[in-house]
Length: 588
Image (tube, rainbow, N blue to C red; front, side, top):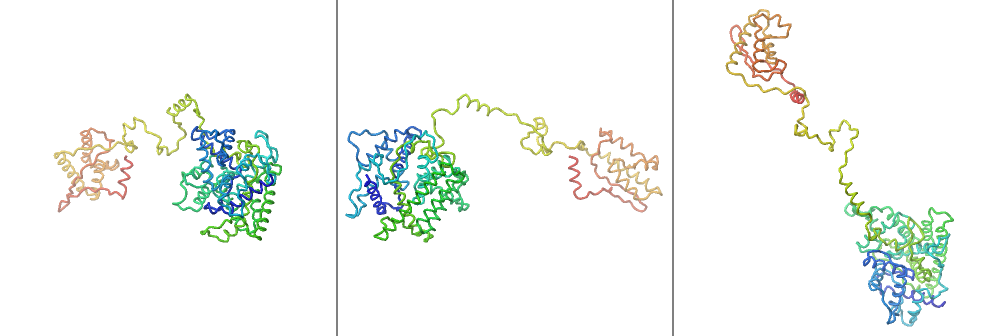
């Protein structure tokens, strides 16, 4: 059985050398037995969700479908073989997953070997289908390939550096290296998205998966595109505010930045051994950050780093020895023509060849003996709040349970409580409470005053409208005013200005002949007729003396002077600018 491992390596070596003839990408990676089984589990869960509505599958069904798939792809199916239900849909989902991830499995490598080998230099059939079938099922013992798996049950507590923790940590190391080689590998992106913890749980992974499906791209490229749009996108190219990935921008930025740092190391360090050592050291530092020396993950990371460094150094020496002879035998990862930094692109070619050889050997590793350690949801927690189970990670958080989440009575009662009017809590209001919009005026005030601006703010009533006097009353008042002016002019001790002053006061107060009380004593008895006229006018109007008089039409006052008769209008006090508006404001 020792020759089986060498023949498997030869088969993969020929495929790697000639894969550019059948694939557009030279960085197509190979899935081993464990990777094929995990992809099959996801495909069956997806088909179960489409038909049964639940993203789950039993372990026994996965193992039965695994045997069916191998027999079908290797053309070993007997005539009386019973087919599984929905097997065609499961096979289609499995093949589409391989195609989207730019990956192939070992059965595809064997089927393409015949058309890729070069004449007599390569053997005709290094591995038969029966031998490959036994190897993938785990029945063939290959001693020269590393096997660190120990049979255990998933319910057993993980002791420090247990086999399950070792397998999970080594898978994370290889997944990071796989993303550096093949950015379309969705399985590698799923295993490294939240390891170490970046607050990218199932909700973030589901939203990233939907974004990748809508954009027809891979998970890692969808995350990179979103982060680049956030960092470099202008006003018209930045993601929308309603984008669900906006909630996880910090975790996605950390994930993409970590891979960018690994890419920088890959392009800047020319020596493959030194470059791989720096890559593994960076991954180990991220995994053991915040963990003590006695932690199981810390011990497993240290052990995996030492083993991978030793394996990479051995592969580098073998490639150098083959290059000195007749060539490397491995198709190099040629840089793209549109690469901006050609030095960086060419500088990492040797390291990429070594990494691809390392990943090919990992694909040829014997499968895990206990499938429950690989497929069960009881996986070790390497980062974040959840384990590394791929099935639980790909399952959407909104899982349909088939029954109502809450009894109907409780839902109806909660709806009625929402419809009940709630009493407003009146707290302490400020002096600007009148400006609050939630405060409504009482109905009585709304009916009495249609507009809030019409509410009276002054206690004094508005002046009443006065009807103009009759012509007889106007002639009588003119005669009385003429008589008063004549008597005032005949007095030798009174100045002519007093007449104008008295007329002005009379026009404002309604008392044409009377001055203030002290002046009234000096006026002769015959000049007090104005008081009687004032009383007569107030009785005719029906008002009281305290009411403010209305506006009177201006009356001409005739002053008889020696020599000629002069008719003058009574003087009116002029208002300053703005006084009229202020008066109207305070009267309202």
